[in-house]
Length: 590
Image (cartoon, rainbow, N blue to C red; front, side, top):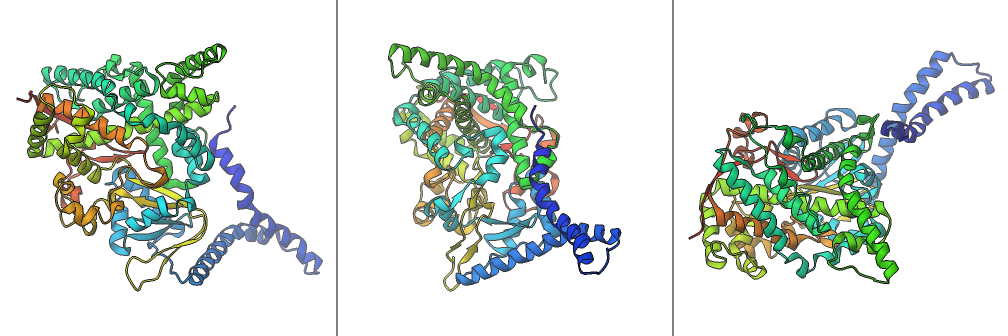
């Protein structure tokens, strides 16, 4: 029987929490009589014991603050500006974080604090310091130049363990290197340039779009591309697709065909639903830091969803393990048509390690690419002139029906610029963080300023590419405008070339995304096929669930928030709440 998370948390923390109370009670019960002062009344002893806990927290906090101030001064540095909190323990900051991620615009509270305190600041959540930065210089420090001083840390690992296990995205040190070295060979040019899989599933997606348009209904493009990337990823990893598109596509809620049992109960729909729910639930834990088990006191809410996902992988894993045993008996070191799964089985027979490795790569291969395609189509619907330029480039280089090749995609400069601009304004992974190991300093941004002090064991050194990608001082006065030409004209030399760390949709440093080129190829391939067959994209607000439309007060706010037609949500990646419902015209390039 599994022990509830809340019990585990209390068992680990209560001894430390109650220690000041117990010591105070023992002291007041034993020391006064020894000094012939008599026994203190029990009410006073109990009250003093209860007061010992908040007193120890306050004294510990003051002591930590003094230590940080002395440590900063000894290095000739200053502490980062601290966000004002009107409630003790950072409770109002915690509430702002939860609200921002649940119902706000991505990073709206961070942007508000940034306007007051600059691009690097500190918050105190539950009395613990957290660092937030949107400075490319400091992000480079975290990801590359001082990589060994920043890791995920035990807290982040524990929080994500229900979903990610000890896979490549939730591990450090030797385990991280093990998973990364296992995955690297599978992203060679030969493998990521095999477009047959993409074409097979793109044809199915196009057919679904045609059928739905013929019925007179709009399409939830987010659902469609999520199924396309899931089917492509599972075929790439296992040589066997989940075939999630066999369930069909969802209908708008206004349709009598919405939520049909055949769709809802389809095995692939169950898989997809758990895939999404597990990530949303994991995201909810992040603002709560290490007290999240109290919110899931009796039951880990993520594990049942991960179990559903593993139930699909398990028979494939068992089958491959049996094949590996047969190969070993026959003296064969490698199997034919090796997949990522067979590659893992060659390396280890530990089923948990294999499952975790597969699931981590599956999340990366499916969700980030699906997010990029979702927001790419969103931009197509908002910018008809860009659609025409893309279709013209496709006609010249690929033609009206030919399958694009590696060389074709390499030659489509405007398509790559369009994808980059989508990734700039709508990066799939909008927020990330690391934990500092040792005390260090970050160099000043402006001449004459002092370095910033980074305390040791800071559990959250957070950075946001979403907000950094929108800085006008880094990208120019038109940074909030969607304009692919910024990746083709003189702005490249002016902004990006001198400071490449201002554009990080795939992270950077030793943890840079291994599947970066795979993702570019898959996104490019699908867009080419889509634009070969359809034009005149438009949003379908009549199909968008009312509760997921941007609230009216957004129109009065600054930046892109005022012009959004959809509501952006964040689990582990960014997505469109309620889906992306669009209409389009069927058309072939001529």
